[in-house]
Amino acid sequence: MRAPLAALALCVASAGAMAQSTLTSPTLNQIRQRGTLVCGVNANTPGFTTIDSRGEYRGMVADLCRGLAASIFADATKVRFVPLSFATRFTALSAGEVDLLFLTSTMTVMRDTTLGLRFVEPYFYDGHGFMARRDANVQNVRGLAGATICLNPGTTNEQITAEYFRAQNLTFRPVLLEQNEQVLAALSAGRCDAFGFDASGLAAMRSSLPSPNDWVILPERFSKEPYTAVIRRGDERWFEILRWFTYAIIEAEEQGITAANAEEMRRSSRDANIRRLLGAVPEVGQALGLDPAWAYNAIRAIGNYGELYDRSLGPNTPLAMPRAQNEIWTRGGLLYAPPFR
Picture 1 (cartoon, rainbow, N blue to C red):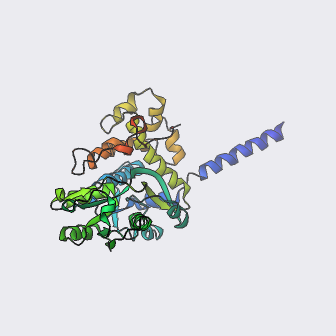
Picture 2: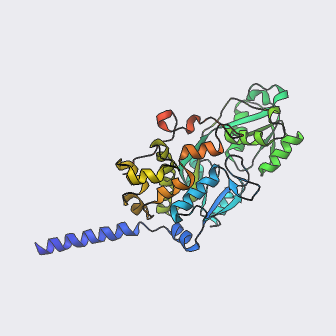
């Protein structure tokens, strides 16, 4: 019996070594050695990423980057933001200029399979629409036939607009502008009759215009636009960390865990799911190659998904966007986290 037992022990030891090796992420190792997470973000998109009067990045995406830094370092300040345009974002990631993208980047099959990049779990669901001048009395998108429409090049919005107008046998004149500041100036100067973008971006642009009430967001939506973090392909553990980070802030809202009560819930909750999420038991953090308190540190720093949303996009912000599909599943939305076990 000694030989079979020895062989079994060797197999178990080998399996354990293999399991430990899978905990290695080249990207995570580089981040730790550098001491800072480098996060690629939108250059200027109200609600997602803007720079305040003190030079601080604000918005939902900025907070997600801070939360990820907190999960790695237990310090939400250990992040450097790199503003990127729609045209340069994927090239910058591929070149290693940033550790990930947390922009308003839509996952599509062609992007996911041809760019050498991986799109993680959606953190926001949106849809393409149009904003037009109120005095034009446009009731729907067909009323934009022959109009001059501002668009960002290299986005799904450029493609969707062209495909829709072609399918409807309608014409339009595109004005391609890379930066949102250029779009804002063009709309203010009357260079464009309309702007085609995701609904959240339309609300952000409208809130930034000198006279927001002069513009109306048309009701139709023409696409599904799931925004995800994006990483370089080939680092499976980094992908898992990003995916479960996204799930963690969603699960925190479902479980009623907030930035204010996370410490108390970690200390006193008897719910096994909450204890695993907050690191009172270490298995989840160990499986990801992170500290057991990784999710707790993130939630303490930025709050749960609902807190993130309300702070940047909610009813008391200039955008005042309804949660809609960005509600958790128990309230009729699309946000759903798999079990933390």
